[in-house]
Amino acid sequence: MSQLARKIISDNIKKFREKSGLKREELSLKLGGDNSYISKLERYKVNIPIDRIEEIANILGINFIDLFK
Image 1 (cartoon, rainbow, N blue to C red):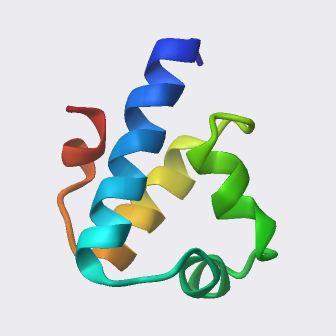
Image 2: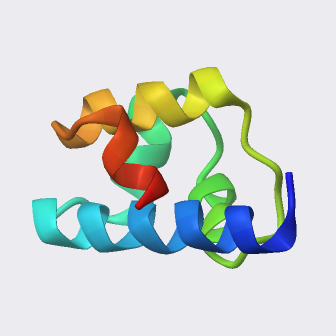
């Protein structure tokens, strides 16, 4: 995944997470990951698999494609 794509997706995850009122730790727990995962993701430090993007969109109650805009 390119740096630009990772930035767009990560920025949108953060935006929608904050809009939904979820803390990073809460989203990490819902994903079954450790507390630092979302922090790393939002700072563009990890590549995120497409199935994980879909899972995050479902948790946030948004359309999958919204994370790519």
